[in-house]
Length: 101
Image 1 (cartoon, helix red, strand yellow):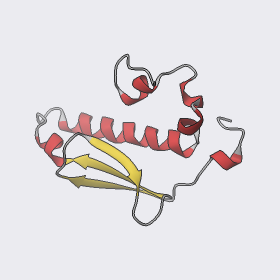
Image 2 (spheres, one colour):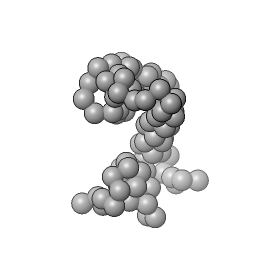
Image 3 (spheres, rainbow, N blue to C red):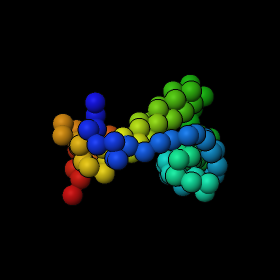
């Protein structure tokens, strides 16, 4: 089991994919309804700038990445830093060799 403390584990009832014009690529957040409902916001500007042969792979890769981040937050590992015993924040977030301060 990844977390021995049940109080660190929250629930997620739904995940909604929001496609919209915005800066950056994507991010995950709680919804306006409550934090049990997550939203992945994905930039249509970013998608529109991709070559036709990369669109499918990029969309799947970004959505998978955001779902992993949601799972880490869900299990309380982000908060307790337990996800990073062998892996830096930079590895998970794709920041290369960056380390959490």
